[in-house]
View (spheres, one colour):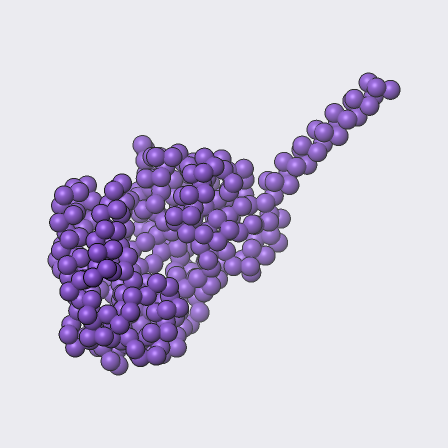
Length: 355
């Protein structure tokens, strides 16, 4: 009796373990940005694959913090920006190299796919797949600020008290480019980089009297522009596209010196428990129709080939009005941030804020 009970118990335990393994493999734990995994897309994915998706909305700093705390566990797929992968990977080993044979590369815009692969490479292995891209530049109400062409124009005395910006590293870097410097080229030389951002910071400090308010979130900026209190600002392109859908006089303005470009990627946490499911999700959401749904939800365009033609008419018009092919070719892509640079930038930005 005891022997039979032991065999039965062992069988039940094995069955439970196997059942548990199947269940966990049918759930993809995704940590991502808001709008990147709309409910409608999750529903379609579940209908096609039978896989559930659990979404945690996050940002770069939080993704790194959570994966660092667990050694790369807790999630099956993450979406850090391409410039936030190799540094944390070198320091903490929180990601697993991408098996590109599992990716349908024909679904991607080739230059974006290649850029993310190149910019997430460490010791001969790459850790990121391009998903969503966008830029930082300016927004202007052309009915009141038709001559805004670069960040230095935000300092024109004619716009005193009528401009805004977010006092973070993109405006510091953007101003440097507008002043004829190349901060990204100086990433490997801290002394040179310090010299560049000091000059840029001095210009931003000089420009402070023009600033109506420093915005901290997109809602703040939207309200400032809509009310007419602000006629131009440093901003992300998606905010400009949103405003353009409401008022054709308002839109994103690509700086003459080049917009600052970012790519949010797909990356595998080191201890993913659903790797096969993660690759299925990547290939699913990069299909043009699905990618267009994500663009409409997030306001940012994807690296899916052919998806741009399928997004909402208002978003497509705003993009076409803001960007030419030349503008896209002139984007200054954010490279991997070397250790210590953000501390240097932070001190300058804090000094400006305190003045």
